Amino acid sequence: MRHILKLAIITLLLVGCSSLGGFVESSAPDENFIDITGGIDRSFSYKFKVEYRTTTDLNQCTTYHLALGKRIAQQFEFDYYPDIKGSAYSVRLPLQELEPNTPCNWKPVMAFLCVNSAGKEPTSCTSIFSFRGVQDIGSVTTIECTNSNFCTDSESNIGSGAINEFNRAYQVDIVAR
Image 1 (tube, helix red, strand yellow):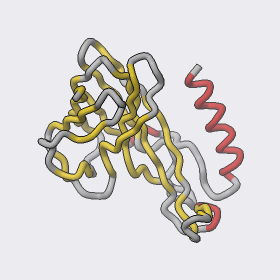
Image 2 (spheres, helix red, strand yellow):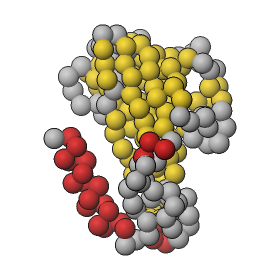
Image 3 (tube, one colour):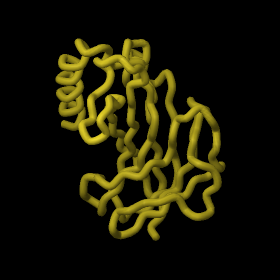
Image 4 (tube, helix red, strand yellow):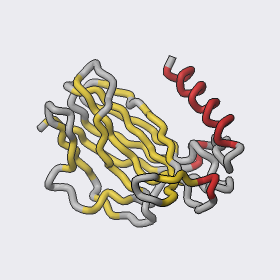
């Protein structure tokens, strides 16, 4: 069902946006990816999300933001649900779901962890990685989540969460606080 809904949304967007300047699904979404693994607290439901933005200033690749009074990049997100076994999980995040070689030059900019109470659709999202062209992250990241579904980096994490090394695994442990 999830795949059918995702396909329907993508189809609508492809029809609506392809004429605007380059919203095209990539034929090789796993060309760049990151695998995320780690320990997990089972008192929450989880999903990961990758946000893409356009990187060109063409009108068909930007949207006018009335409150800011200027044109801003268009964005689109893809959701990924982890494979959970016991107290461990793994998930692959493709980083080329949208074809970058279009007039809009779509690029992934952030990866998010989304949580909710166990059994509910994850809706509260926290940025865990940014793709800014630098590598500034510890070997293990620990994310602490509260009963109110708010997650933050643990105080022991060093670095900004920026990564530029792809096609490898990152360890992100998710704990209840």
